[in-house]
Amino acid sequence: MHDRPKLQPDAVTAPSAANPARERPVIAIDGPAGAGKSTLAAHLARRFGFLNLETGAMYRALALKAIESDTSFDEEEPLLALAESTRIELQPQIEGNRVLVDGSDVSRRIREPDVTSAASRVSVHPRLRAWMVEQQRALGTKGGGVMEGRDIGTKVFPDAEVKIFLDAAPEVRGDRRYRQVIPRQTFASGQPASDPSEDPETAERHRLAQQAMLDEMRERDRRDRERAESPLRPAADAEILDSTAMTLEEVLARAEEIVLTHVPLQ
Ligand code: DC
Image (cartoon, rainbow, N blue to C red):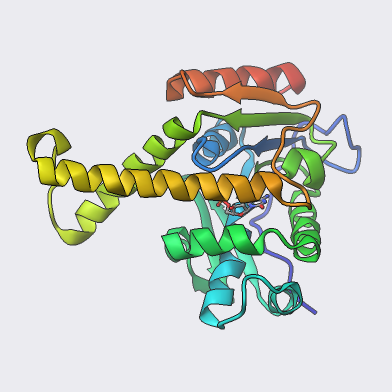
């Protein structure tokens, strides 16, 4: 028998109107990669005193386990067996989720490109998704969570009190993701961040790296949107928040407004 992902204890305040079994509401945030879901989810969780749950981290954790055990990303049966014998823990923190796989902290490792790509491939399998959805429902059963992913409003919590679908144009998402990654790379190599406009060779290297990241993101988008089981799409009752031309502050303020129009929080 596998363990469920573990969570820290929850506080109880406003009861859920949509589902009396829940003690507090659920806020579902879905959208494509690089739209800013994690930043938004972390902000809303802080603002309203909720737990922030990154469901993508669970797919990433399993993908890492598949990489380490040489399990094919394309075969459902062995992946499901791997999932059932793996202990995945999400520990919500102020800045995001700490992720443990069989007790080891893999929070940084699962953000690396090989795991990112593998997570998108393992997440197409219907029975594996059903297993993940079961775990995620168990995590959110009491409510009081901001749950972020691709299918939260459509599949995991179709009765969530608040559903936000956060989107942005692919070029904008690619650019934001690139800016997140670059300082980490320059820091790791001990080099100061360079200004691409000063050195044509560096500028070209940055342009190619950015293009490669955008291509990879488009490929993941395609897989997420076109898969047969729970493809990425907004729930019929989701509020669409297109952040293409918005600042971060505007997105956060608008999302707070959306939450407050749906649930009686302070
Ligand atoms: O949100 P993320 O980039 O960490 O997600 C990693 C992969 O997991 C992504 O390519 C799609 C998949 N995913 C999913 O299919 N359903 C979710 N609820 C969350 C993530």
